[in-house]
Picture 1: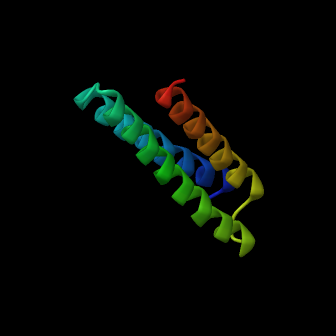
Picture 2: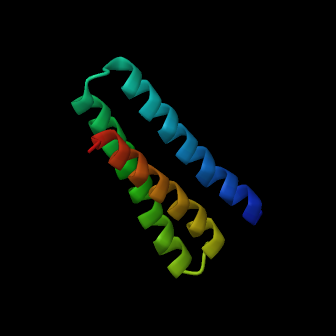
Picture 3: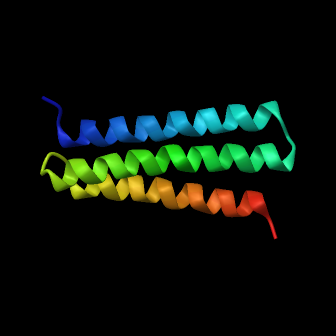
Length: 87
């Protein structure tokens, strides 16, 4: 059985891989539309993970602090998308 700290590391691992995927997509095409699309897709992945973990917490199978970590990554992804879209 995993400890709580291992669970958080797993969630962070997934978020970091989503970030790597984002970076790879951004490196392929530097046009603004493609950059925005890459950020948007990253945000979608993080949102999906956060939503799934909300269910886990609701069922008593996960800790709220783990959900808080995912919420941080979602907010970060939202900020990046806003910045990519520009003024």
